[in-house]
Structures are given as structure tokens and as C-alpha cells.
Length: 188
Image (cartoon, rainbow, N blue to C red; front, side, top):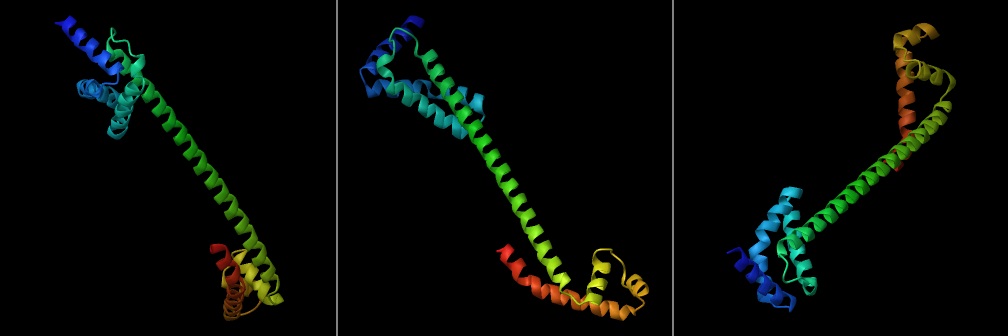
């Protein structure tokens, strides 16, 4: 029985070598599931398994003239499949590494850009704080830089809490108005 199968495969392979499409279709239908299962068990992805199995048979057709009709076709199909799986795995690995590199580069660029923007805004804000009237600037800096409460500022400067609140509110209105353009520019 085994020799009959080899004989059928031999004659089928001879026909395939000559470009017989029916012989190719026969081999395709005979071995597709076997090769597909092998690839699927290797990659665990149905889409890749289907694509690679198709590629295996395309390669078989393209290399049909080099087939030895006296040898079994199964080892050849598995060798082609294994090579395609290796290539696919290498491509996926390279793609993954490239995407990782891109993500890292984008993140680094974003971090650098955010840092530059932050320093730029801090410098602009410092310039505008310097333009505040002297007493207002002092009150604002005690509030924002030293984190003192309105009561502590009032006590330290010997002024009313209401004056502190008013001066901080006026400082914030002035700074928001002056910074609005710069913030909008950076956000766009």
C-alpha cells in the first residue's frame, strides 16, 4: 500500500514538474490542512497560518522544476513551511522592535518638547511677575512661591487679609491675561 502512495506521488510530482495545474491542485488539496496545522501550531495565529500556507504552495509551484519526483513531497513542504515561518517571525520581531523604537522616540521627543514648553512658560511667567507693582509682586510670591496663607501674608506684611486677597486676585487677572496668548500658542 505504501509503495502505491509513493507511486501516485511520483507520477503526480512528475506532472507537477511539467507545470500540470491539476497535479498542483491535487497536492494542494491533499496537503493543505497538514501544512496549515503545522504553521498554526507554530505561530498560533489563524491569519498568519493561512497566509503562510498559501505562500508555501506558491513557492512549491514556483520551484516545481527542481522537485525530485522520486522523493516524498512532505519533507519539502515542511521545509518550505518552516522557512516561511522563520521569515514571518523575523519580520514580526523587526516590526515590533521598530514600533518600540518609534514609541520610545516619540515619547522622548514629547518629553523634551513638554520640558522646553514648560521652561518657556516659566520664563515668560517670571517676566510678567516682575512687571507687577512691587507690593503686589511681594504678596503674590509669598502666596505662590512660599505657599503662605492669606492670613500669614497679612500678618507678615502688617496689612489686612482683604488687601492680600485683592492683590492676589489682581495679580492672577493680570497674569492670566498676559499668559493667554503664550498658552494658546503652545497648546495649538
